[in-house]
Image 1: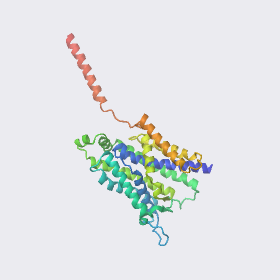
Image 2: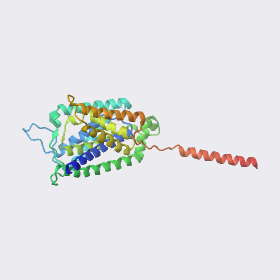
Image 3: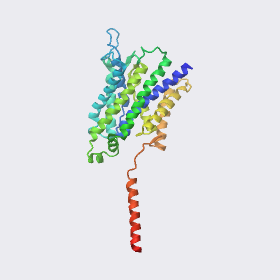
Length: 340
């Protein structure tokens, strides 16, 4: 039973982490309409910088090289990872958000992610190249005497607390004046600018906040797995996060939760139990991608707003009702004057 509950706790940890990813992407795309096709890159930057903040200085002669190595406590490393991801989002935003919109913006983010991937994967002196970081200590692991299964349960508490904090922040942002300005720009940037809204500044804010939130998820990932390499943040991972948000419902954080469960946990994990096909060792992973892709297509075909659509305020209902009431009162008064 201990192994089973450890497995369940592991799934729950990844569920919480993917929720944080989806919240960050939802702020960018669901709120502000930013097509961030390299969201997984910000996860990697958050994870890498959190990792080197925890690790000590790289030792000579070990053939493992990385920058920094600060030996800081994990909570500080978490903040460093989030800030690093936000800073990268700010730099990309300076290029992508000032003049570009829609599909051109998506192309720039995709190209930027490819550049970052190529630099980190080929330069062994930044984060040890393709080998990546290994041996990152787990949060409070030296202070808690637990086995791997029970540690998953402990780490789940950390992930759950951070997930709830990100969820509350995202919901508060949605209902704030800034969130309403983001959605106005998403719907029609020209009209929003005509009303005095600085679309570049507002979208940049959404970009940075979303990247920082994804960076928090990256810091949690490397803290739990204790390692991170370029093989763990390919474009396929970006596809999973986008699929979770599209299936669940963009613009709605409850939808992001549902999508993370359906895609990142149910579809992504259930396919691992399929029997191996002789002569096709990679078939299971291909079936997993096809299943998730089919789910996205069916969602867009039958329910394009996702399982839980965004709740949009119907501002026009109140004026219409008052106009109808006023028209009725006028008719009544007119009829009374005619009778008189």
